[in-house]
Length: 298
Image (tube, rainbow, N blue to C red; front, side):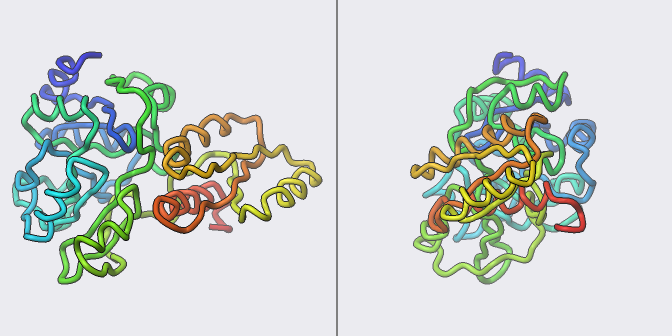
């Protein structure tokens, strides 16, 4: 599919899977109710869960932007940073989950930027996968999970984890979701951050989950944990962790999908160092592990 075809379909109220630097998004123009309804239906996403809105560069299209937001935009957009801001009245309730806030970002991937520039309309674009499951970082992931959805193939996602979300709706800035823009970078620009209690996309305790049970442990305990599981008769896949956190993050969801194919009873992996990008990696691993566990163990 070409950029021009993607723009034509989106402008006509269709839904298209689009590449971003974080994960592939399921895009639809925010003022086309049929597109937003189809996003919820394709994902099996409960209504009331807000969607991230993607803009080319102008957050004012959908949000009230203060000096704090403007500073972050100047320093970190386009990029993997979502801002939670007071919404404009023109943003439909179906996009914000009926809340008075909107989550907005300007993605860095050149193809979705071309689409946004040509379309001149904001797009809602949650991850292009079934609700709660592992996010897609390649076009083939979308095709496998959502067959029939047109995909603009932009290759593998460079970041591989969902965007950092910063809540700027209160007096003190708050971190809603860790991501590639780490806390240290944000605090250099904003000052100390609190933890946000506001509802934001992708913040369920159990999320990003494979069908196969995911087991997490420390690097020192990984070998003994795998040995014990195998001794109990379980088929265990080991998902390796590297020393390059950026490469580790980019490969994380692809690795989970490759191992989640019915060959194994368990997937085991070690947590990353709890610093920088490792904080976001561990956040996704813990949510994935809770989502893959039986309900009584979540």
